[in-house]
Length: 194
Image (cartoon, rainbow, N blue to C red):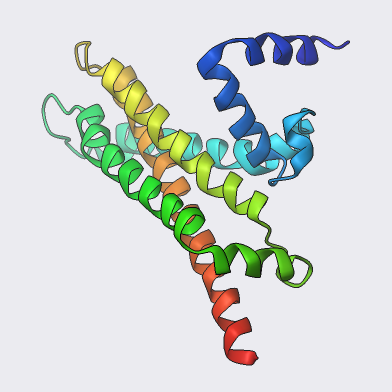
């Protein structure tokens, strides 16, 4: 048994980490039901999660370096980016949970449509479940980390971390909006075509 699989077994034993692990693994696996019993390949983690983390981190790093070297844009004294995250992401989390509940709890016709049109639309209830749950987990983690970092004195390291979390959270928000848009766009197109 590889080290990663052993680590995953231990993670699954920790109560809160177990749920987080299943959601992240399901997202990396693209909603495949195998994600409950099998670890998604590393390439899936890199393509679905690592890509956005890399670009978020790189964007914030490049902006801060360019600002330091060339632009010298003066930011507000005692700027605390964690307060920005704490103002935005709890609201987005609540909104996202509401959308999640509406999609799965109120519209049984939508779930039926997903099951019958799975091959044509490449969208299944499992994919929607994973692609809606993962951004909510990201919003919750951003809120947690920003809340913890706000307990400490404002410094450049915490501001950089919170700026990265802010950009990554926005990327996840745009992905969530795009996913909801294209899912319902396909459904509307199918209903109007028939």
